Amino acid sequence: MFNFWPKFNKDQSSRIYLDTAATTPLDQGVSLAMQPYLTSAFGNPSSFHEEGRVAKEAVEEVRSLIKKNLHIDSGQIIFTSGGTEANNLALLGVAKNYLDENQKPGVVICSAIEHHSVLDVLKSLESDGFKLITIGVHSDGSLNLKELKEVLSEHDDIVLISMHYANNEIGTIFPIKELSKIIRKKRKDNKQKWPLFHVDACQVPRFLNLDISKLGVDLLSLNASKIYGPKGVGMLYVGPLLVIEPIIFGGGQEFGLRSGTENVAGIVGLAFALDLSLKNQDREWNQVAVLRDYLQQSILDKIPNVLCHGAEGERLPHNLNVTFTGVDSELIAVELDMKGFAVSVGSACASNRKNDSHVLKALYGTAAPIESSVRFTLDSKITRKNIDSLVSALIEIVDRQRSV
Image (cartoon, rainbow, N blue to C red):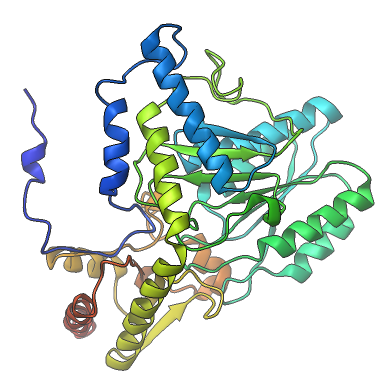
């Protein structure tokens, strides 16, 4: 029998993990909550027998918990396989409904630094006649609100606007409440329900407000793997009276919007991880912000010719994206990995797109320092001693590579 565990069955205590924007370790409490639904409570929620009813009750109980935690009075939670599917369902589901109602395509809008699970989906709609407009960002990654307002004033057939709450590569936070007000005014002026507003919030539950009643969004995507929950599960909030079309067909689960047997253990894990993240937001923000700032200042003080990316004031507190001029970022990541440090050269979801950071390109144009940029994303378990060790390793690696 194939046994994969020995391949990674070694002491992990010596390694320092600095890639939580890609994924986080599973919290022990979340794991315990999931265990019954991986073993004894294994039923299919669509089955009518007791095993099925137990599973169904678990799904509905945690759906209610999520609604409570996100302050959702009306609207629905749809469970998915992760943030990517949630984004796809939101964007394609809205576009399909718009075509059904209007018999013609319209305009879809996003920022130039959206995750590929948003940007690539909206690009795909162009083959159906939709017009995609990407809104630019300033050099710190903040959204060009003036450009967005101009685009809104020029078009009356805008279907959807999709923006992330915070960027996964450089951590810049977008002003979601302000955007909601701008979009709602456009709807009021149009005297119709369009455009709708979708937010990719996968990076933010550890740190930012997720009160749906105050954010003013129509659709919102989350996943579990960024918040100490399991991989392979996410959710989409769909606002009240909103109609979207499914993109996966079959048994009609999740109110007909996401067919397929529910991942009960994963859904339970998502709910518990989200609950813990929201409760610990202030503590985690304060702890990782101090550590991130210490890392940033240490790098600036001890390594010449570096550039830090992202807005200083409006940036996720765990995120630090740094360019080490004249050094290949992949070589840095590989050498750090060999020394026991896990870091990223950008979005893990874009790792197959070699040297292709559309985020840095949007910030700097043709001068984007893509091949020399490394992303560090921390959690509260990191210590100053860990950071000192990391910076010492970076000094050695960067000096050696620059001298070649």
